Length: 187
Image (tube, rainbow, N blue to C red; front, side):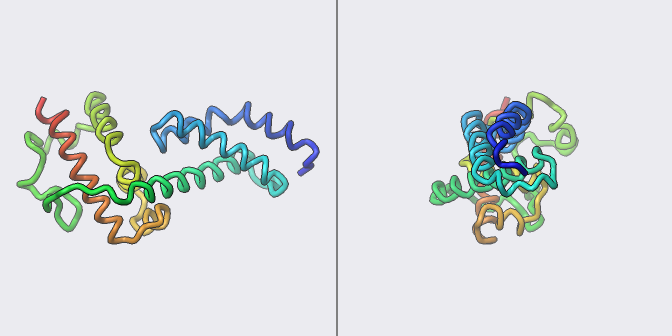
């Protein structure tokens, strides 16, 4: 790749890929300012490592891989700064990670469980409840249940021990339960 055209190429990439990178970052982070910052960091990293881009892959693919690393770094940083968050909790989940039947949120019926994610109002409430979680807790829920990543992969991505991960996941589910009971099931 000709580095004399680096600035022009990067400028072109900014025009072509900024919106797509922002959309992906916002989807992962759910915070506009952080998503914008991460996209800027991607292009700064691209400028600094442009000479390493050999053109064997599509520029968008290369930029997305940089963005994925920036997002992982963001979650690691947030996790480290929020590592001391605690919440009191009881045992609400069985060994298979499902609610213990008598500990289900109030008014939660089995048939409703199948259709809740089809309800736009419930999705809005769920998103609201997820936003109230500390960032590292939210990351564990998103990675586990939305992206359906393996727990070992999540531990590696967040750079946490498996026991710590399970505790975070447990506490996250408790907080989500409490928030959903207050904002959805008690309506």
